[in-house]
Structures are given as C-alpha cells and as structure tokens.
Length: 134
Image 1 (cartoon, rainbow, N blue to C red):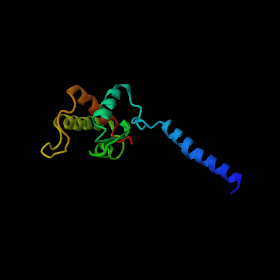
Image 2 (image 1 turned 135 degrees about the horizontal axis):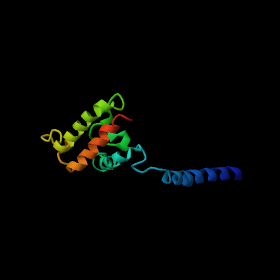
Image 3 (image 1 turned 135 degrees about the vertical axis):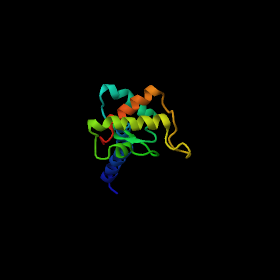
Image 4 (image 1 turned 60 degrees about the vertical axis):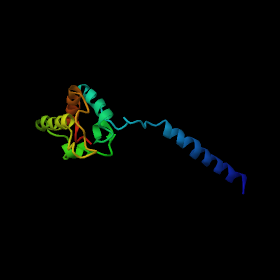
C-alpha cells in the first residue's frame, strides 16, 4: 500500500473517531431541545408538565416524548390547536384527570393527586392552551 492511502485512512479515522463524537456531545441534545417557547404565564405549567407528566405523555409544546400514556396532542386536539372556545373544556378534562386519576382500579393507570391543586391548574392551563401544536 502507498503512503497516501495510509494518510487518507488516518484522516478518515480522525473524523469518525474524534470530530463526529465531539459534534454530538456539543449539540443541543438535552431533554428540553424540542420544547416550544410559550407565553410567560404558561411557563410554570410547562416546567411542571415536563417534570411530572412528560415521562408518560407526549406533548409537542413541552418537548416530551412519553412512552406510556397517550399522546396529548392527538387525544385532546387531533386537528391542530384548539380554538379559543374549546380551551376551557380541554383544561377541565386535564384538571379532572390530574386530580382524580384515570381508571385507578387498573394497575399502571394514571393515579390521582400527582400534583397539588395549584400545580394541577397550571398544568391544565398549559396543556389546554398548547395541545395540538405539534
């Protein structure tokens, strides 16, 4: 083999072994990379959702990709963001689910009382105002 082949191969190894991992580790790959910017009054609900609900539920505006519960974008606003006239209804559904749980007789279902009443209202407002944006 010629010396040039070794040089080209060596450069390829450097790119694959050093440059690509460096780029991956320095890219924005944190849990919040997919989240949407939301109105200031919804920021608390967004943070609470990410922490307490995002493991199970997918919600585009929160940047979560849950793997157990339903995708709330599809469940609550399947045709895209809800019109203003439906937001209050969605908030009520979310608040009821958070406060009362869903089908607690079945193991693994959403339990009641995950959040305190104020936190539940903040999450419900966030989900109601942002579901379907993804």
